[in-house]
Length: 204
Image 1 (cartoon, rainbow, N blue to C red):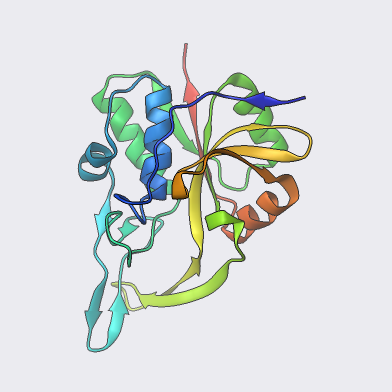
Image 2 (cartoon, one colour):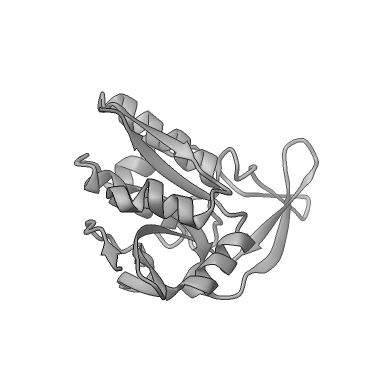
């Protein structure tokens, strides 16, 4: 069996070098019929906090709460599922749409496929850029003095389909378009990036 949802594609590479989460989310929003630009999403709905150097130490936000840096900045990092869940729900509220984004981190792939992809609902999905090996670090200090460890090569794509060998993604990096990646490798990188995903439930 092969299943691919046709979703409008947006490339992130030039304008949003660290904006994979935002671009993947906007592809989903456009698929849902919401007329929104990536810039509008970043400026109005995405919670962000800058990175700062203080006395030789790097300080930044908790990526579970805010985007670390700016999606326009090549030296920035990214954000995690709750930030995208919250931003999506703000968009739905603003557009008076009867939809709800849900953080489905740790959900089994089989369940993601059955509950969302099989029902023509793409899923915002964390793995690694070009499915490269992930790297632990760098670290930075949070405002409470604790240390946060980033997992490098973090990347966010929109899961749009599958067949027996592959998962299919609208991958915003380097104009990859809709691309097939091997199932086992996707699952490994997804696990290394904390198994994060965000889906949308539609109420009818």
